[in-house]
Image (cartoon, rainbow, N blue to C red; front, side):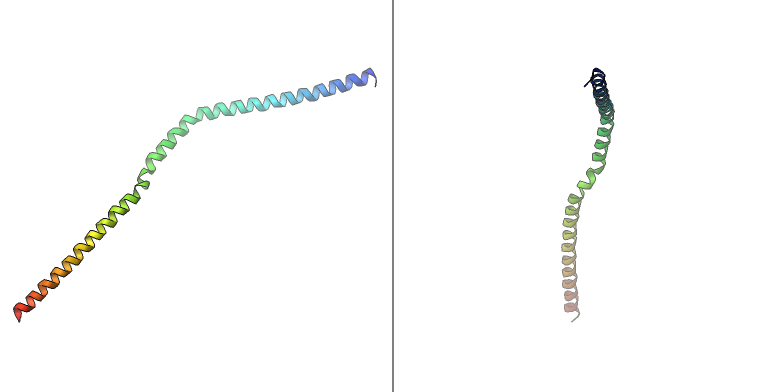
Length: 99
């Protein structure tokens, strides 16, 4: 191998290595820029998440509302059955008076 060939291969591999280093540095700079952008947007995203949480809390309370409504329905049905019994008893009392 001649001196010129050695220098040729040496400069070729130096250029390839340099290109790899430049590409890696470019990717690293891109990652750093993206990380800073994410860090800048994180407080905004956190505020939105807190607002969404605040707005969706009533949805989680629907189960409690359903349980309360079911209890009220049970009470109303009990009142209805008692009212029917009272009306029936009063109706029989009226029949006894007429007879």
